[in-house]
Length: 452
Ligand SMILES: O=C(O)CCC(=O)C(=O)O
Ligand SMILES: [Fe+2]
Image 1 (cartoon, rainbow, N blue to C red):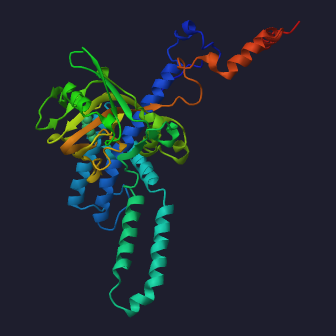
Image 2 (cartoon, rainbow, N blue to C red):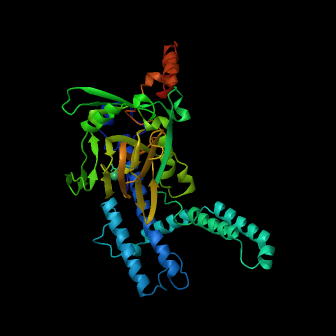
Image 3 (cartoon, protein in one colour):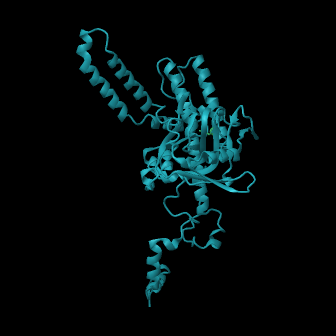
C-alpha cells in the first residue's frame, strides 16, 4: 500500500475551504493509517495460524529443518505444507481482499515478501525467553536438590513428577508460537450498593430501561444482588416477555430457529443500560490482551491501536433450554475484530460460554457468581463459540462489537470532539492576542516583514 501526500505544510490547514481542494488531506492520512493498522492485524492473525501448523510439520520432519527450508520434507510433509499454504492464501483473501493477487502469483510461499514477513513474525513470536529460562532454572535447581533422594530411593516421588510436569506445561504456554495466541480474555466487575469511584471497579447495581413491545410504555429494572428485594421478579419476567426472539446469521439471511438459538433480544434502540464497560477499564484490559503485537519492540510501544465498543444487543437466555449452538459471529464492518459479552447480575444455572481457537478451548462459567458480579468475556471474531444450555434462571447479556481504531496520537486529528476553548492553550493565546503589540510582532515575524 502506498500513500502519496502532497507537501502542503505551507498551507493553512484550518481553512477548510482551501484545504479540501487538495487530493490528500490529514483525513486521508488518518484513513490510510487505520486501514494499514487493520490490515496488519489481520495479516498477523493469518500468518500466526500458518506458523503454528508449519512448526508442527517441522517438528515431525527429518533433521528438524529451519523455518522456511522445505528441502528435507517428505511427501506427507509436503502435502501438509501445501494444505497450510492454501489455507494461508484463503485466509488472507478472505480477511484482506485484494492484498494478495492469487491469479498472477503461483504459490504464496515462493514470494520473497511473504517469506520475509513470515520470518519476521516467527522471530517476534520466539523473542521473549526470560520466563522460559526462569522455569528452566527452577527445574534444574529442583533436580539438583532432589538428586540424592532419587539415587537412593528408586521411583521419583509423585510431587517431583508433578512439579516438573507443571513447569514443562507452563513453559509450553509462555514460550513459542502458541504463547501470544491469546484469543479470548475475561474478567469481573464487583457490584456495590454504596457509591464508589469507578477506578475501584465496583459498579452500582445496573439499571436497564426499555420500551414495551408496542412502544406504549417505558419500563425499568435494577439488576442488583439477588437476595435483595430490588431484583424485582415481576420486572424480570416483564423484561423477558418484552424481548423478541433472537436470530442468527446464515449467509445473507437472519434465521430464527430455537433448536439452534433459543434466546430473547432487545435491539439497542429499545433499551438503555447504566453500565459502561470502559468506566471499569474493561477496554484497557482487552487492548492489553487482544491487540496483536506489531512487528518490532519499538513499534509495540507506539500508542497506535485502540479498541472501541458499540453496544449491539441485550440478550436473555432463559432456563430450562436457552441455548446458542456453535457459531462464529458475523463481523459488522472491516474494522471489527471481535465481540465483548457482559453478563449482568441475575441468577442462572448452566449457560457456559465456550470459545474455541486452534484446538484450544477457553470456558467462561458464570453461573456460580451470576448474582453477585458483573462478568465479561471478549474474543476475536473468527473464534467459534457456543453457549451451553441454561437450565434455570435468566442469563442476561449485553453484547458489544469490538472495533480496532487508531488513537490519533501525535498531532490532533481534525474534527476532534473537543472544544478548543476548553484547552489551556486557548486561554494563553487569547490573553496574548489581547496584549498590545503581540499581533504586530507575530505578523511581522511570520511574514518576515521588517518591523517599523
Ligand atoms: O452470551 C454469550 O456469552 C455469547 C453471545 C454470542 O455468542 C452472540 O451473541 O453472538
Ligand atoms: Fe456469538
